[in-house]
Length: 415
Image (cartoon, rainbow, N blue to C red; front, side):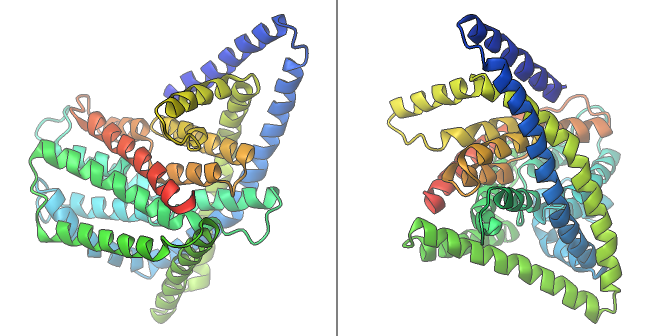
């Protein structure tokens, strides 16, 4: 419903502004709108087509990891942390395992695999919920951490950037250069969500698994940042891209090697996963084109420039650098719609260039935040929860902190 309202508003407001400009003597405004519509529809299809190969590749590799037991091993490794974060779940209850598997899938960028696991976890949490119409404490913690979860590999964002780089004629482009900044951005959002819910639920965070997780992650990110801080922006971007490529390819090699050692038919597993990747990429096409054409109308008529310019003027008046402003709508839209934010991200990359500061920042924001309203509606709706209590407030708080954190990280690494 929210995305429908946004889509209709973009079209109707754009039409009204176009009529106003026509009345002022701009005889070419509707020609520009139609040209933009056709060009944008083609752009959306080209991006989605380029996305097919990367999604097939990554979901094929993940299927190998799943059959080799590596996904399950990763889930068990982070289980001690989630046992402390969800004290209301009995130790032997299956909801704990489903939550860990859902978080693991989100960390690896497997949105299509994470959603079924998340719905399964909600169903199991509902079984131990004393009030079937009201969200329980474990449900709220799960939903907020789900919307603010850490993403180790932003698969779809990397795939879109690589596809757009090819269409923009960039050679030797490394789409993984946003890996480390996005990882830090998602960690900031995750920490904000965890602290917010823990404060409300009076969960003690000073426990060794939680401290070990935050301390280890923070120390690793600190070491990486300090080692990169003295580099020029271009050299830093190249080094981050190298680190991201090494990590991602290292995971691929690990999954294949373990699968082969356990006598898994690695090739067959890859093909099965790649089939799923093709379906996911094709499914994106109508959603991406739909939001891109609405954004095209909104931008061609000058409405988007008016909003971005207004925010930019306010930022400049406060004495701040305003180069981040063009990417800000991505973060504002992401809480409402993932496909809408994806369309805005593509729009920023098309307007400013996929390798520009604004393009990189839009990608970081897209990978660092989540569709809070959508996740809450789908997950709570699946178990008929009516009273969501403070889930939305904590989720939006995590989103806000995540967007601010992503902007600061973008400046630290790429400006």
